[in-house]
Length: 319
Picture 1: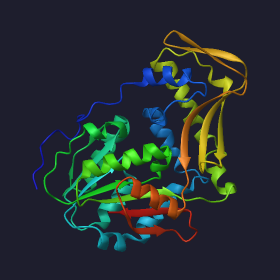
Picture 2 (picture 1 turned 180 degrees about the vertical axis):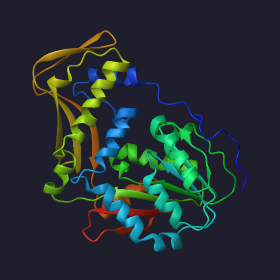
Picture 3 (picture 1 turned 120 degrees about the horizontal axis):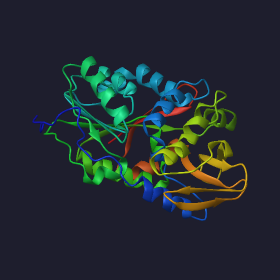
Picture 4 (picture 1 turned 90 degrees about the vertical axis):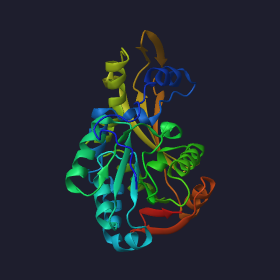
């Protein structure tokens, strides 16, 4: 295999630079919304890592348990000497479990929009797996069509843990799967986490933990706007809200205005009625059948699916 060399700790892809345009557009809509990718600045990424450790948030510990318990089966189903390409790598904690399970993986390509998360995680993987080449790529999911992996002819394994697929609207999820298929190329495998439908008494606390970490994560978006876009939001005048949308089978995160008020962004003023919200994130929940249809529409087929004993979460092997 040949790898085009580039320094492992320098950006290979420009970071997202359309924050202002997205915020101005989103706050101008009849139903205000801001894309969830903007939740993940350095502080947002750190807060999300804290979310994964709160007692109410089951997806991370359940998926980690699955990767550990089914490691031998995952190894048997995946090729040896492979390159692992991870989408939205974050801290890469689950990657260590996958790399340890695989037979002689030769390279790891983490892709993430947050440099603060990407490069420290890449260094940790380099130290923990000295025989694996590490080639971080700084960029978001919307950059995939412009990316070119610096890789040769080794087998490729896509890795997309954490149920991040559920953050996309259905058409966005299909577009992502198609983009990942084009990037990885023919014959690639794709290991992907997806959260499952479950009772609301489990779902709702996972997105509204008692310690308020998820609330801080959501409100940090307004703090980022104030810092980076000359915003004038009063964070105490908004609250975090997590609701379940039965029609779309998803948890929705919103920032709810506590009073009639206005705030400006880069000198442009926006009004909020009391109770009006800014929609900041979706987390879709799947049945196995619905996820299978999604994968097919995105150009993949579910060849294996692994579930925990309580059927809270799934790890899906796509071909």
